[in-house]
Image 1 (cartoon, one colour):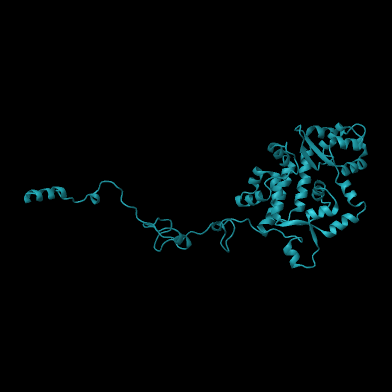
Image 2 (cartoon, helix red, strand yellow; image 1 turned 60 degrees about the vertical axis):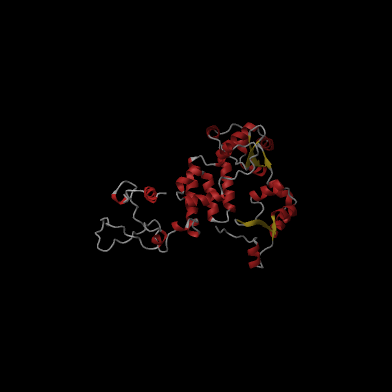
Length: 347
């Protein structure tokens, strides 16, 4: 399928000589002096703008490199904004106990940015240090004293960290989607195969969505993360989350169908002028036949179906005894006749 072309593609640059110059990702990372994990995280969080995507390679405009360098603090400020901390490090940063921060994150006060499974097979959540600082400035009452009863009940009732991470991850992927099919694939990946199958009954449309995003990309889960855990953390499981995903999928799928329908085999495509969902008309009744009455002889179809179908032939008679299978054989075989001739000639 054709996808949106960005300003960073070679074709786009050739068509528009005035387009801004762009750099490949590796070159842009070297220009900023970032290592690969930090640069990847900066792109993920939208700290560095990109162009392209889809069938085009993602690139970074040169003016974006200049913007990061000329901002207050430059690259150091960028690294401070994307610094990640785990729960223990975050509690030390806020000056609270680890148990208190766990309760705050379970209640949904802070959303994780990433997660991974360590060598002890423990699930580790990572948060932006800058968001923890902002939370401390905006909600100082939650860092000391007894937590409100509603917050304690929410933390004990359900862990909001997986849902918070999914909402952030979906927002990132939707932001970077080059077209409506890619955006629809994000919501389909969030809902999972079973929910998507009920929401998108067309198998060809589901095949397009699976080809783009077979599952919600988890990022860097680590080698110890198994498929069951990844599936559980990347699939919507709350009624409100599922309802939001279904509504969003229906809306963006409508735009995708109008822009470019899903490819399907040629014989299943609607003929020009046909109304979607309308049943094709059957061939006319043979002349002289009563409507609803079966014709006495096969009535050959007309059009391309007749050309592609082999001619109907009368079946051969069954290989059962019958008068048409009985041969009139001579009473004497050829060998007996020859023997009689030899006797008459004395040979």
